[in-house]
Length: 210
Image (cartoon, helix red, strand yellow):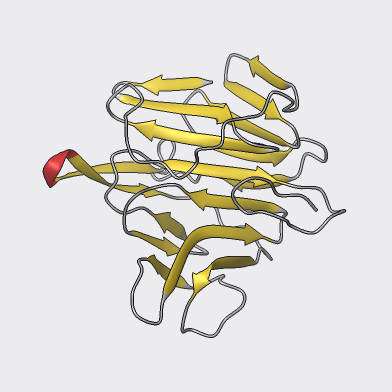
């Protein structure tokens, strides 16, 4: 599923099991960049359903549904329960557009910021090994940057039963609770997956089941 406004184009497509992959750039086409998500959806993936309406369009893949409004705002829900998982915030109070910002840097790169609404009671786990001593990452500021005594793994898990992967070959920054910020890639490239509540998590990059 593709959304476009002026130069900005966003792709939302099924990936793996119960997952959706989001890619967005100002080039208007897919870019040939290094990737971490190499596994393509299998032949036996759940049926993908796309529904296009006047004010929004949605894609249903397994247990996750992704919706994008006519103004470009993304929202992810559990397709079985209807529970809201993740939703982009509004940057300008006088606009309904998504709060995604592309700031040009040298070398045809961009500093990209993407913000999502904070959910009351939500807890975050993962993102590697850090020195702050907290299991719940909510309220923490994490640099997605490998350094001595710090291990950055750009994948988090929420107690709202979804996972989020930053698939960018760049240094990033995460502020959990208020906003999430990217580094200097050419295109945002994220992967969101959801789960039920029956089995423990098995793999972060391929499948998430509970």
